[in-house]
Length: 164
Image 1 (cartoon, rainbow, N blue to C red):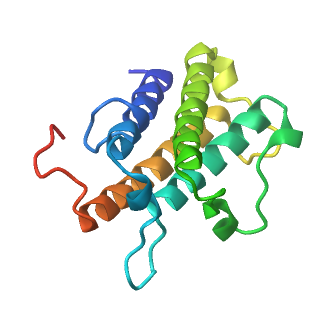
Image 2: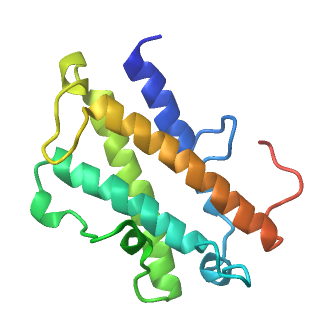
């Protein structure tokens, strides 16, 4: 299996294809607005929505840099800023999820359409090539999807029996 095929499988596993962990779309499909903003009483964890904002931040920033649209990339002074929520409304929760799914799919399309040499091209503003950045983003996503599942379970929002 070549690197591109392996990475495409990893990338799909993070969004909409079942693998060893639930994909993000499945992990979020039944999450209500109230569950999305909920935090444990000790407030030591981010909310589900904050985690989705964080995932979106890094994927969108990479997409904008890859496309050469750095004027439109999201900005943050420190990592904690990447968890910031927009206005806390049901509509904004839905928009955040949809934008996260959209950006992930756009990066997947770029990967799928890339020639071998494109995979190893340096992207302005990034330390690594496309293949290395998407590998890291996929691992990052898997980590935070695990946190989303844990938060769902803490709220009783995770079905006891699932196909994964």
